[in-house]
Length: 132
View 1 (cartoon, helix red, strand yellow):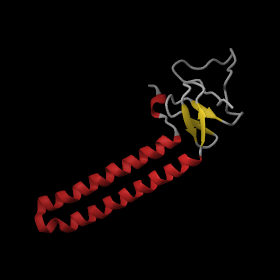
View 2 (cartoon, rainbow, N blue to C red):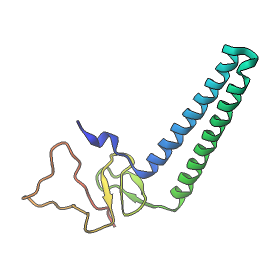
View 3 (tube, rainbow, N blue to C red):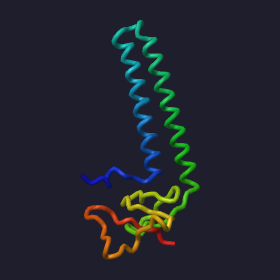
View 4 (tube, rainbow, N blue to C red):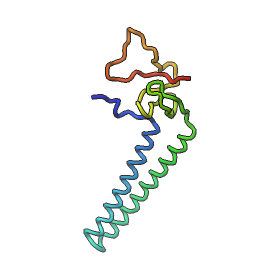
């Protein structure tokens, strides 16, 4: 199994969790309204609890999207050496947002220019250092 498919950039991960919270919040609100449909007036407390919980999840997703947006404005933007597209990098190591190549500013973790003795594994990306 290729685990490269499930690895994404840090900024994309933040956005993914924001989306998950939006969907969970909306689902809880829909579940809450089903209490009124199933039990009538007696289902109102059930609906109120799930509406509040869904609203809290939606506010949490808004906070995550705000945080990701603030991070996005202050991170290093560079050109991916593998695919050539502009990508944003958070921290010392991250992945390209498009081709998912591992990017790093840490010389100890950079493996660009692999020797013939240690070839990359087939099917896995060759980690590379960003162009300066």
